[in-house]
Amino acid sequence: MSSSVSEKKFMPSKHLSCLIAISVFLLISSSLSLIEFRDSSRPSSGFPFTSLSNASSASSNSSREGGSGRQGSRVLDIRRPERENRANVVSELDSQGSSCDVGRALLRVYMYDLPLEFHFGLLDWRGAGDHRIWPSVDGRTGIPAYPGGLNLQHSAEYWLTLDLLASNAAGVARPCSAVRVNDSREADVVFVPFFSSLSYNRHSKRQGKQSVSLDRMLQERLVEFLKGRSEWQRFGGKNHLILAHHPNSMLLAREKLGSAMFVLADFGRYPPEIANVEKDVIAPYKHMVRTIPAADSAPFNERPILAYFQGAIYRKDGGAIRQELFYLLKDESDVHFTFGSVQAHGISKAGKGMASSKFCLNIAGDTPSSNRLFDAIASHCVPVIISDEIELPYEDVLDYSEFCIFVRASDAVSSNGYLLNLLRGIKQEEWTKMWEKLKAIAGRFEYQCPSRPNDAVDMIWQTVYRKKMRTKLDLHRRTRYRRSQLQ
Image 1 (cartoon, one colour):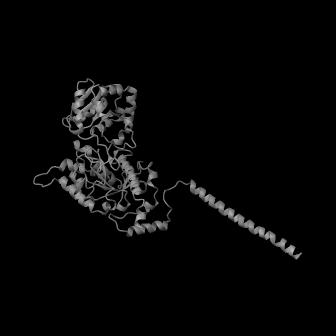
Image 2: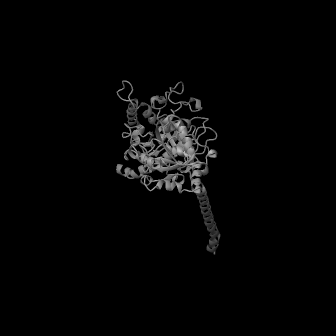
Image 3: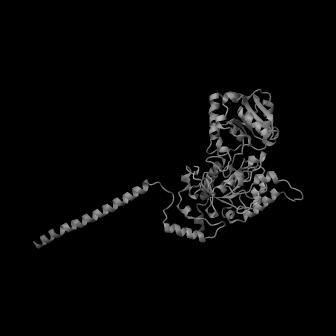
């Protein structure tokens, strides 16, 4: 009896304990599920969460580390979203006119403070006061002008350098695709501010009693400087960006610095092991003719000339095709095919002629590319590209077939009139679609300071980013087993 009473007295207590244990378990499980749901519904930032104390510690540690450049904050590097996921916003114009946030940029760029004679000194600019190496970009009055004429077509070096300077200038509104950083260890790309095209154009010939030209001397000094830098040695130069837009620029140094990423007009005078489409960037020429505003662009019926070409006709190498085409087309009443130069208002005349033509012939010359293509785009004259080896700027994101006609060289010079039959067979509706596309994309080939979203400067930086990501992928793939081999 007492045993039965005792059993009745304790059984409810056991049930209560079990019930409490089960309730606690269910409460914990529900809480964990809720947390998991909230985490899965939050957009991933692409980086691990770091406490403020850890971030401060990282910043403190970075200030104690040695570096080749001036020290910069590493907190942004730890806490910022992955730049791969920010590609859709970095080209927005900074409407506040403040310097760009490093965390928003596709590219963090470290630029060497090379002596004046490598860049703006070639423009006869001499620094003073706080601006002994770099001109002020806060206002256009402080920026030295680049030489005009044919020099200007290879001036990408000038515009990219100015854009990096502007990225740190308060009050300058520009897209934030690339931002200059002060610590080379924070950089994705190391920029070499050598105006190599200008150096070639102005100083490739020996002057007076010079034993070597100034251009050659600058290249020799540049190679010595770069090879001695820890930034170069860290990756064998693969993270460096060097501009050599003129086909003859960097003739001495290109082989010694061939591991770097080059910004070029084309690959016509480079062996493939030095320059190729896998690692290097093709940049547009700066067009020479005046840009036609879209509202002033003449439509199909107001362009009486079928096909237009004006320039050097007798060229070497692949440019021999110009001579053949000249003899095929010179007597056609609706074709303008004549010799032309920059003298005697040649550029102005060419601009008017292109703006009055339905098609503009872009024919291979001494090299596969020429400024003529970009003059045609600025004139909204549908380009006809007759250059089998040509490489085109940002072709990975821009479909040139939407606004250009491509003709193989062998077809263009065929005696059966292939070229003229092709052009005369393009109806007004088809031509107008290409013309409308030209007006829409012409801004992608405009160099300017400050840069604007998706102009030539911004598009080049975006291309560098895409090339850099591919290079990084290749590097990571090649070094997959490095750690296990070292152990």
